[in-house]
Image 1 (cartoon, rainbow, N blue to C red):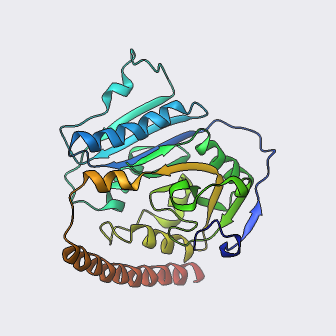
Image 2: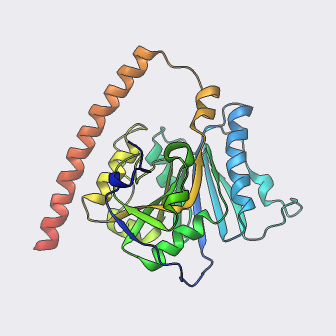
Length: 273
C-alpha cells in the first residue's frame, strides 16, 4: 500500500499556513559515486535543481567516491548562476564505504541549523526545503522529516497541507532524503554505522523512534527520486549474489538493532540514576 491511502497514515497533524518565513542556511550532504559520465550527470542534475531553488541558502557537501571528479565549478565567481548564497564542497575519504559513515563525514563538515541527507539521484522542487522549515518552526518536536516523492507515492495533490507522523521506511521515512534539525545529533550522537548500505534507513528509524524523536512526511515538500537512473547505469548484479548479499545485510542489521537497544537501555539507566 502507498502512503497516498489515507487510512494507511499513522497520524495527520495541522500544518499551519501562517508561519513567518525565515531564510535559513541548510547543509545538504550528497553521497555520490560518479564512476562514469552518466553517473556524474545524475549528481550534477541534482545540484543544478538545488541551485534553481532560490528560496534559501545551501551549503552542499558531496562525499564523492571518485577522486578524479569534483564540483568546484559551482563556486566560480563567473559561473552563470551568479549566486552568493550557494556553495559546493567536494569531500574525499579513504574510509571504507558505509552509507551512514559517509553521511556522518558530510554532516561533520557543516554547521548549519538544518541538514539534509541525500542520495545523488534526486531532483528538488522549488521551496522543498522551506516547506520543511515551516513545519519544524511550527512543530519543533519534529526534528526529522522526509519530503513527498511522486515516483514512490504518486501525486501529492490531495495531501497538500498535511504532515504525516511515523517511521515506516518508504512510508513516512524516505532513506534517500532525510531533512533534520542539526540539534537532533545532541540526542542521537551520530548516524549508526553498523550497517553498510541496505537497512541504513531502517537503523536510522530505530535510532530516532526508540528515543521518542518524531519524524514526519511533509506533503508540501517535493523531491523526486530517480532510482531507475542508477539502475540503468550501474552494474547489473547477479540475482543469486544479490540475494545472498541482501540476506547478509539483514543479519547485520539485526545485530546493529540489538546493539542499539542495549545502548539506549544504558542511556536510560544513566538518565534515571
